[in-house]
Every structure is written in C-alpha cells, then in structure tokens.
Length: 322
Image (spheres, rainbow, N blue to C red):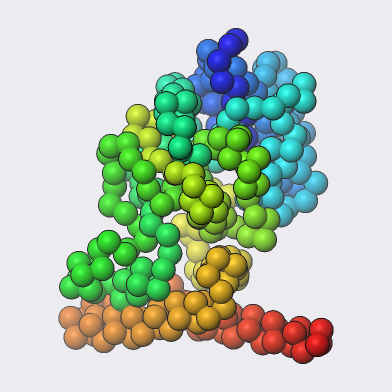
C-alpha cells in the first residue's frame, strides 16, 4: 500500500476483550491505509498480554507489546510509539485509540485526509459519540483561572458571562480548530512529535492530552476537530470514572502538575483560589434556589489539602537542597 503510513496504538489496562474489539474496529478502518496496529499492555498483570496475543494470532498488521510498567496513559502510549512499526521504519502519523473506542470504517481515513490537507495541524481529533448516538463533549479550551471559576460556580449568569472562558466547549458539528481534544481518538503528526516529543510521563492519568496540545500550540502547531471522523466511545472502562465515589488523588496530582509546569506555582494558587471562591458562591446560589450541590464528596477538601501538601513538599525539598 502506498500513501501516508499510520501507526495505531491501543492501550490496554485489564480490559483485553474490549481492547481486542477496538483493535478489530481499527483494523477495519485501516483497510486501504498503510500501517500497523500495536496493542500495548500497560503491565496489567492479569493475563491480558497473553489473551491479546491469542486474540490477534490470525491477524496481519497487528501485534501486542508490553510496556513493562503501568506508568499511566501517556507512558503507555509512548511505549507504543517507541515500539513503532515492526520493520523499524518511521510512521507519518500516530493514531491513539482508547480501548473502549470503535472507529467507523472511514474514521481513520478522515483524520489522515484532514492532516494531509492541513499542514499547520499537528493533531486531529474525532467526533465522539456514545452507543446511543449521543455526542460526547470532546472539544475544550485550555484551563485558566476564569475557566476554573466558571466551572466551579455553575451559576447561570456567571456561565453566560464567561462562556468564552469555559473549558468544555458546546458540542461541535463542523470541522474547526480548537485548543485541545480528548485523547479517545487522536491522530498526531510524526513531524510534530519529532519536534516537541510525545506525552509527558509526569502525568499518570488526565491532563496529558491537554498538555500535549498546549505544547503543540506553543510550537506553532494547530489542534483540529474533524467532524467527519466518527468514533463510538463507551468511556471510563479502564478508569471507572463514571462510578467514582471520590475523585482519586492522581486526578488532583495531574491538575497540579499541569498548572505548575505550564504556568507556575503562583498561577496554581490563583486557580485554586478562584475555584474555592466560585464554589462558595455557587453553594450560596444553590441554597437560595434550593438545589443540590452536586459536587463529588470531599472534592474541595482534597483539592486544597493536595495543593498544600505539594507546596510543603516542594518547600521542604528546596530547603534540603539549599
């Protein structure tokens, strides 16, 4: 096959059957496209590696590799990038596909066609929908203090005033540039990866694609949403996010790392202060209107204590190194 070569990566964490289903869907969508599919087992330790090897035994252009450690989403996908093509040659594009995401037959081709026609775009994300066909929110603005304030307050007049600062964007149905897209179905130009590198492995889970798109933007690359690339996504199969009783510590750690890395410790303090102020105003608003708070249990306490502990550790380390 001629034309652009695509390396598709499906990262597995203890969902081998689902990962194989995603790989089969990707293989169908790669008909006529040069390239290979790499299933990466993120050190599941539950027999996933062997199960996936057995599941792809009769397939060409598909193989299974082991990451060697569970370093999270970014580290696992980086392991797939390092594995590369079986012959050691370089891909033109890397396609990241969640283990619970299933591209339509023309979804991958649509991303390739868009990036081929748009040299300034370094990343392209798909239109994501659920099994019921309902669109998922997958296009976003970069996080900011005002965006944090809007999201924490959840007050109608405030949201209308700050609608251009809100991190989640309304569902988009036409192809356009955005700040960042969710990583469930994300095609990345290899030339851009050669310039800025892959995912930052300092993130275990969440914010890693936000960081990648921000680094791309700062280097002059665009991130585009491609409406014609449609992918069904179940969501949260590996993370269990939909059933969280409490937001896990790694989400807060990723948030802190994103803001301090990209904007500095003082900006993290500003963002957290904005969140707390907005949350307080939102609580008063909902009490007056007799509506429930709707906030995850212990969220504000975990947010503040996590930031304070991280600040204390950083201060202690600086003193030790002085």
